Every structure is written in C-alpha cells, then in structure tokens.
Image 1 (cartoon, one colour):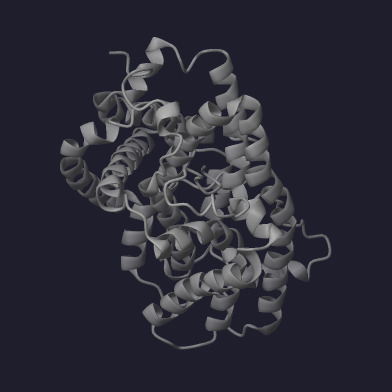
Image 2: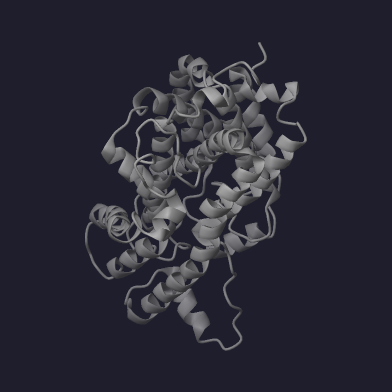
Length: 412
C-alpha cells in the first residue's frame, strides 16, 4: 500500500475532524516558549548574554530548559506542516496562501514594529532605573554614551518563527505543485524506521554549522541551516497528515526513544560550556569550526530533537486527544500570548533585578505572571475583537463547534 495515498485518512474523510492533540501540543510548545525565555534569566549558560540575567542562577534551570529547547520548536514546525497539508487539501493552493497571509504574514508585519518599540522601551527603562543591571544591560548603557557606537542589529526578535513559516509555506507550495511531495520516494518520510534512524542524519549538517544549543534564526536574511533543520520537521509533519496511523506505529518505540534521549542528553549537556561570554559568541558568529567534537554534539542534538518530537506526538495523541473548553481556550490564546510575551517577561525581570527574592519565586512570577497577563488581555482585548479574528479567525456558532476542524493559527 502506498503510504502517500492510501496509508491513512484522506482529506475529504477528515475535513470535519478536529485534531485536539495537535492543537494542544501546539499550545504547549508555544507556552513552554514563555517559560523558556523566563528561565534564561536564571541560566548559568546565559548569565553574561541575556538582557535580564539575574545575579543568581541554577544549573537545574539549564538542565531542564535546554532539554526542552532541543525539541520544542521542532515539534511546533512539524505541527505546522501537518496543518499545511490539511489546508492545501481543503482550500487549494490559492486558498491556503490567502489563509496563511492573514494568519501569519499580516500578524508578523503588524506586530514586529511593536516588538521593536516595546523591547527598546524596556531596555531604555531598565538602563535608567535598574540599580543592579545584567552584564548586557551594562554594556548597552556604556554603548549609549559612545557617540559613534554602532546600533544593535535589527532582527525578527522572537517572531522569527512567523518569518520562517512564511518561507516554508512558499517552499511547500512549490514542492506540492511540482509533484515532489507526491512522488514515491517522498513516502520514506512516512516510515517509522526512517524517522527514527534516518531523519537525525539528515539534520546533522544543519546543526553542525551552528553552536550548541542551536540558536534562533532571527536574521532577516533566510538561513539555510533553518531549512535543513526546522524545514525537515515541517515536511515530516505533512507526511503525518497523509498517514495519520503513523503515530500509532511509532507508539511501541516511544518509551525506548524517551529513555535513550535522556541518556544522550546527559552526554550532550556534559559537553556544553558552563557559560558563554559575549566575546565567545561574537567569535562563533564569524563561523563555526567543523570539528569531530562539533559534529558529535550536532549528532546528539539531532537524535534528541527527532526522538523527543516523536515521543511528544505519541504522548499527545494518547493523553491529549479530547475536547475541553478550558484547554481549548488556552490553545486559542497561546498565539496571542506568545506574540506579546517577550517584552512582558523582560520588563518583569528588569524590576526583579533589584530584589533579593528566592530564584524560584522570581522565576514563577516572571513566567506565570506573563502567561496570566496574556490570558487576561486575550479575554478583554483580543478574543472577540478584530485582533482575535486576525489571529484565530472569526467566531460564530459553527466555529465554536467541537467537531469542526479549524486549527488555530499559526500552525493550522
């Protein structure tokens, strides 16, 4: 049986099914990003690099946060590919591109300038008011007093994922139109053994070209390594839509994949430096030396990223494939929360830099406080407004039905 055509439910048969586990996994991936960015203030590895880096940090933060970092965004892009395949089948190429322009491109264009403004305002406030600034804030304050100092680079900030999605959508449509994704060789992406053993090898070159843990591709110039890493997960996600029984085939492997990932992560973490200096990062940005150690670290990253993404899919389908008004609300709000979270996290942590509170209390305030503000503003300012229509579509009786597949943006 050809896994590309007959190996699962077809689009017509599934157009009225809501994939609750995919919605919920997407929301978890995005909200975990909020917690991850809050954790960086207390990360020994980032103590000299993060804007809100606190004077106190904990290796526990690094152990947990960098483990999640290795597969959080790969999982997100896989889910995005899953729903891209769904939408092309349901709306056609033109309808798909219109939908993605509204849900992804327009929010990126609208919110990116606001992120520049709010992030810049937060930095300016911190330089003026924080008595115990982080090393980077101190550097910014020093540079502000140098007339000829170069301005900081303009980036896509934490909205890089929207920018990358736009690029991936274009490539995906080209591959669909040229028949590449319908060819028999593409069916290899829907093989459990290939996903477990072959996919990590495909993404090693991309990861080997970057320092570890891999950075975010925030630059406006498209990064080839991002296509060779996140792009493969996106294409694999499309294959998961074509073969929805693939997750069930992976289920027996999941416990072993999880255990091996934890063991390999212990080795990966032991190879990381205890902290990065700004000088080291500036040197690495000029280019990474492809040494045996660098390739070995990339290989560990690749295995953990792939295997834990597959484990997450299996766990999501088993434990999160159900309707819940509370979970649905959180899933709907997660897009808005992620868009606005970084200036909020940083501003809260700027205010905490001059306190002497327990690290874990500060971490809880900055992470869950940000999520709480996001949920509140979503309820009051977004959910039933044009902003909410832009991010998640108009709401009506049909759109609120529990069986209708209308996967929330940005992944669906």
